Image (cartoon, rainbow, N blue to C red):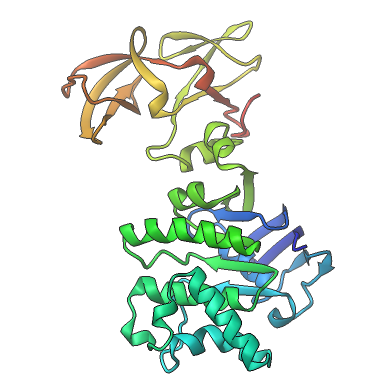
Length: 345
């Protein structure tokens, strides 16, 4: 069992607080993605779990054992870095075998594990080559194989695909998901790329300013953001937001459109661009920019003086300067508290 429990972990660098009392539980064999913009604290949290940083306060538990006082080699973890860290003077075989030789395993066991992980990563034909003879994607496969070969309880990945081109990243995403599920390893994966997060994760922890804002399944994070930040960060394009005026008894006016909403004193309306459709009644949107997305068209418009985006079917002819009436799908509307920025149930 390799459940990971983070209890009240904080990290200060001088007067700067990189993490604020973070609590997070990651189930055995779960694929957890830490997602956020640069500087949000995701890599600091990963390094604390790895033992490369010491928490200013709090506890880290792996498999029911407290490890925040232990060096990295005693935590049962392996790590894959952004820059691959493949040794250029060693063959692919010896790169994968490196951790096994450090553990002084018998040669027969070394060969068995190298062969198994090389087959998992589809690099068995590369075992005699040196890293200078490999492509970026092949070097990344070697780095993952080396981490898996030691059969760790936990594998930590810090933006491992960010140096690959778009097509190779797509291929490696699918491969990683399958390999790590087969290896039955608990995985924590750091990225700023929401597409990676949505496609790989069992759960996503969205981070901002040293806090975990929401930790949930990808579909739940996308459809039901717990905070305004999550709605504005997840999605490309992100959610639209408009001020709402209370009309009493859970009725609200949003840019002139009357809507049912929460029983609250103040609220902000939010809707995703794909959850709008042309209608007789709705929000009056003055089209500014039109972008073709193949089967769909992305419209950038102005609604009540605010930027507003909609994704519509491409068969509709739309011109800049035209005014559209866009109706939100009622059960896709979300509401946020303007003061706390948190979702209103």
